[in-house]
Length: 189
Image (cartoon, rainbow, N blue to C red; front, top):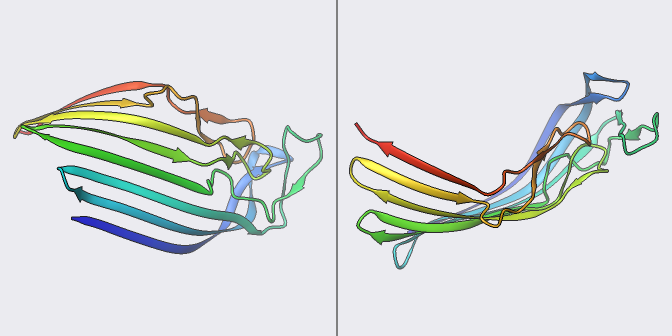
């Protein structure tokens, strides 16, 4: 009743674009990025009418070929830095999730899960770090043959976190959503 998968990979992307330090409105080719990684997933049913879904990913992403330079507001003006050897932006070394749902019978189910994201750099300068975070979610649902009502409480601890950044500059950072309640009603016709 459980399915386990594992993947080991080596991805290489060329033609990676970034803002031109001399003209931020212009994009330039900054080189080739290589990401070595491992991904593990588990999904299925556990004894006691539990559904489980879990995953872990390890990523080592670096700029392996580049003659480009980038600059940052964190550096003195006109102080470009080499891109080659830098960690790829927005690439966490580790990330993981765990989700459990219990079938309570008579159409009801309840559960919850955790999401983990390791620290990652906001841009190729590797000067600004988005901190790691863990968020927790809860869910409940009721299903009939024709209807499904689902309640999801996300980020139950109201954890302040940053989910992303622009990727080419250090100062365009996107915060994660605060605690939120989602109510969904589905009907089959």
